[in-house]
Length: 364
Image (cartoon, rainbow, N blue to C red):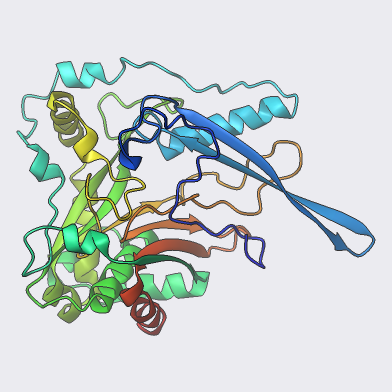
């Protein structure tokens, strides 16, 4: 936790004895099959403030993302907190391990016949045949912040300089998520000094609960998110208006329809094993998906009630991911004061972090 009372994410998984690593063949296998949820509550110490003491409590949890997504995790913790306060849980998570099978067994007749590479295109740097060299490079974590005014400026940039395609398509204005993500994508491509011909992919995680027909229950407890790729050429990102990157992101999000999700579920079901799809906590690891240079993955927590949880000692003052597992991983988190700001924890290669910081603020 820093001097502002905000937790700072790291890149390491602190197991603290929660996971049994005795049978793991490698750190990549750590904890898989041994536990689904681990919780650690720690008092960070007291500090004097006038004539009274302040005790800071940190509640950290780790859950298998194969089983649970952020929406379900927050819902679970919120109901748990109600019980801890002595209240009745009247909105309990709904667990049905078979509920997604109805979408797998009855796919739409027009569902696209997509294969695994269609869902996870992962270009590598020009001149390299794999991501192995980029995986080995030193990385570091940092925390950035955007004020409400800066976010509004980014939205104005993408919506007031729309290209002809967007102007004639009668689309609503780009959202702040799209505007901020487009800005990050462009700045990171510059910081990484990509060749004009370099292909780059920005993955955004999309909640598909309400995109299925029929939609999943709002109380559904499980994993109902998938990463979707927005693809571009670095030269276009740099030379074209900011609305270009925004339109690529919006196009990727919009393609997550009922048919797309059904194809994704069928594709995942048909995979003989899913270890190759893992990408959490893989910093420095040669296995699993790699969303780092020249790519990135953004997850938004803006729609989650991350500060409403109250176990009886008051609402949360900080909420961040406990770790950022690889280069190019970042989150958009609402500021704790409800002032419209965003906190952006990320992990980048050491050689790119200073340049990214420069472009991130100067190019607003």
